[in-house]
Length: 96
Image (cartoon, rainbow, N blue to C red; front, side):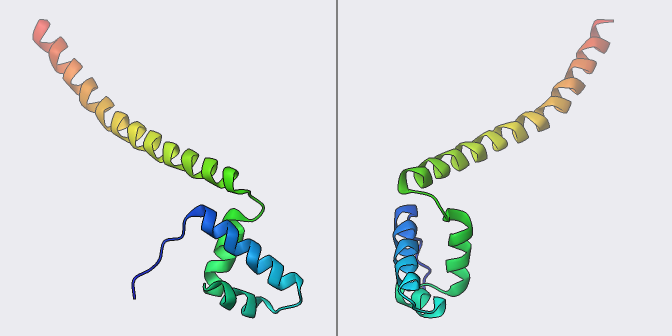
């Protein structure tokens, strides 16, 4: 069975539905079953998206994507630096 990827807005909605069910006295296991996820997924979502609103979740995801892009750029530059330093040493040796 293929895994369904939930959008952040859907996750917030499902967490709110679960909160309503739990506040009405339903056990957590029943609330989790009602929103259609496993208890592990529910607690992971709760930890990640706990008190956030939809616009905050969208901003969080944008920042995480930008952070990933910047980390990749730093990794590439970190790899290029020793190569360029070695090339500069070789060029100095040729000039002498």
